[in-house]
Amino acid sequence: MSEKTKPKFFPALTGVRALAAIMVFTTHAGYIMTASLGPGFQRYFNELSIGLPMFFVLTGFLITLRYYDNFEFTKQWTKKYLISRAARLYPMYFLFTTAAFIYYYFNRGQALIGDPNHPWFTMFLNYTFLRGFFDDLKFTGVGQGWSITVDVVFYLITPFVFWLVKEKKFAFQQTLVFLPLGFLIVLICRNFSWYGFFSNFTFMLYYTFFGRCFEIYMGMLLALNYQKINIKPGSKKFTYIGFILMFVCVYFFTLIPLGKDEQFGIKTPTGMILDTVLLSPAIIMFFFGLIKEKTTLQRILSSKFVQLLSNASFLFYLIHLGFLNNFLHEGINWLNDWTFAFYDKHGLDWHSPFEYDQLNIFYVFFGLYGISVFLYKFMEEPLNKKIRNYLFLKINRPLPSTVNEQALPVVEKEKVLE
Image 1 (cartoon, rainbow, N blue to C red):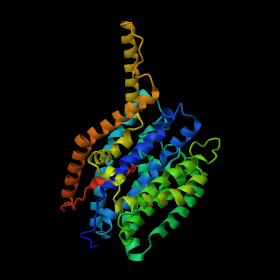
Image 2: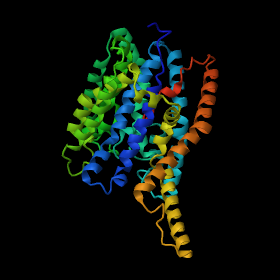
Image 3: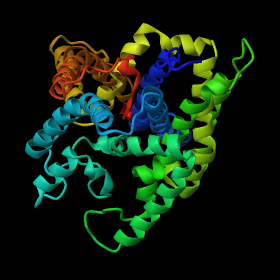
Image 4: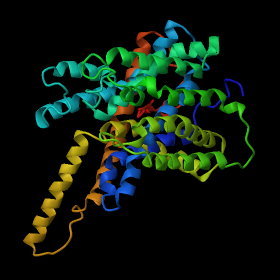
């Protein structure tokens, strides 16, 4: 297939963003949802953080799909590429980071400010995404935003990555450089007590690009090679086998013994190995199936409703923990008190629809996603277009052809993200 006819947008993969975001939310809310189901269910829900590896694989795939064919190792190309990434990522991140610091500083003490003696330093690290390199500060600001640092590192080195692939045929081998480099940085920095800057191997492997690069590069390899693989007409095995294997991996994570300070099997050395050798290939198989096969799951993920949820998934990721989540919980508690006061006033002995934690978490979920969709439609999308138009006009160049940029996740996204 020629470059002109090569598809650069797969709706089902856009839909994966919503699926991954919901899985991350489920991980953080699982202790409430499974409170009455026993420790086995609780442990399984805790391990549904596999949504994060899905985001990282998707980042590698979609950035490569969108930009690799037209890549030029020039200052002009790099400038346009970075403007496109920054315009999509930074405005809403900046807004919610600022709001988080204001809220927590005045209402929740220093928990998400970091060192109370150096709040401006912590803010600087958050606004520049550098906090993702500091173990003690990784959850400051918008706590879950640590994963965006992983994506940002990949965005910044993408021109060099693509150049090595195109000119030197040096693709997945790059991970064999980044991983030892990560270990070397830890060996040097762990002796310095500076807010946990690369303070241990577990932090480096789970929270930084040096440990997560395998997932991103596997996504990149899928983008470079998916057209070379032919499948039988009517095949559905890749989609469903990959999908099932992902959740089998979750079960394997639950079997990993946890140490005193460990909460997730995927964060243990054994879990990280399983992530690389089993979970990531399962995700690749699932994505390949969504690209190549016609299945019910593909149609669901490609539906307009799921596409809307996916486009708002970055915002949902940013707000699913933090002050908006707290506001919704506090609002539900107020409604519960008001409901019982109303019952008492009228002599009613009824149950309140807000007295069950397992039900309330669904109210919070729908509320957060509703807010995310609203902000996407009326703030993020218009703001992104204005910023991109302004910045591209500043460099006196026409806008690059847009091939549904919403297909590019942030990871954080996270990915989100794009």
